[in-house]
Image (tube, rainbow, N blue to C red; front, side, top):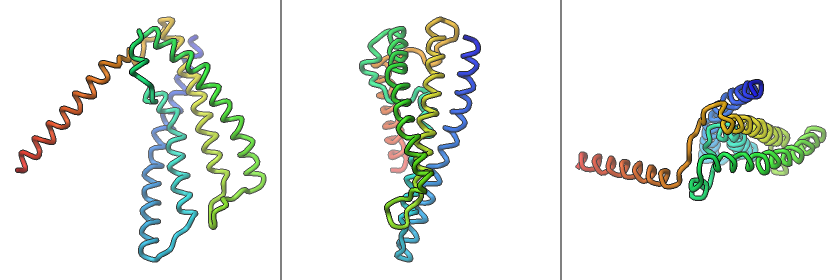
Length: 203
């Protein structure tokens, strides 16, 4: 198990680096969008290439950061149901969900995207929009996103088994639906009070 945990740490470091780096793609997409809007307003010029580049960057940010989101346990979960169970049951839900849903889904997507990517590379596929970009970079990002998500799923599986066997501490702790709702309510109350205080001070 020690070797698998070492592999898990390597996967975590790689996906952490890629996920944090991918956040810069959002800033780049905003910059491209702003430049495109300025050119369109000032010179009445527009290009499908600029528009497609925006969604390339935006999609890349989400796809390449998906594995990092899983690593940080920030993916969407129905906590109202999940939080009603004990931590041991939650571990089993995560384990079964990863084995039966996440990993098979990633395998299916990889098996579908890879041949399509090879076809795009072989045929030099270009967007059907006038002045559009080549297609293969978008498909390559899609493939990379699911590959990274698959290996992160393996990492989470390794860590989950180690936690259930008592070999490592639980990095996330129990998810309680009631506590989550109350914590969010307290944060909203504090934020509202702060805004009221600021408005009162300006008055």
